[in-house]
Image 1 (cartoon, rainbow, N blue to C red):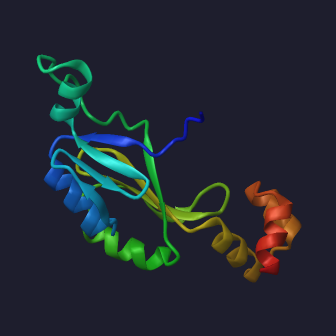
Image 2 (cartoon, one colour; image 1 turned 60 degrees about the vertical axis):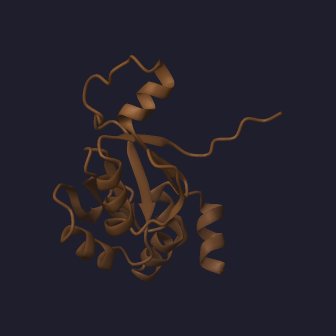
Length: 158
């Protein structure tokens, strides 16, 4: 038997508010709605009080803040600039405006309603094609991004 990772369950203070954020701002579609637990593709939201009760027992109370800003949900978009414009108009807390990371991938970060870090970035194949169109050789792309040269060449041949 093999254990497979299916995705994180994020504890939230208000399941409806968080569901609205991930559906409306992040454009995710609900795959299953079990009331205090809502599943999206790759992750789920869990009403914190219900989660604590199930995990620790009905008499246990949630303690401390939900998000310690040490966990990030990562999303990608083929149209990162348009998503940045859309999300910045909907989101109260922007951590990083649209910018290139040290490995040159364009992305931005916001906080969800509970303070969890949410990143949206361009897909790596798109990054490779963009850098190549800007004049970088496959070797330069590898040196500047640490993306394996074999993958860089595969993307550029596709």
